[in-house]
Length: 92
Image (cartoon, rainbow, N blue to C red; front, top):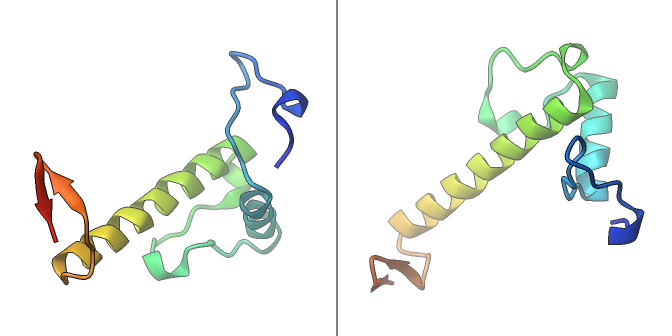
């Protein structure tokens, strides 16, 4: 990831904190047209040619966060997630 000084941060171009891995996934998505989250079964998959890199990154970000939430909910409901605090109550 580039050093903070190397990033162009302006109100028009905020620091999106993209990692090299995310950039590579988006580049591969643009090259192949294959959605980087096949397990999400999004149909029809977004057509990469219709979106800017920033919009593709936003789509990637939203789906990635969705995956993280689904994982946490699954872990919590199956009792494998420890240390979750809801309204001050620890759920083990």
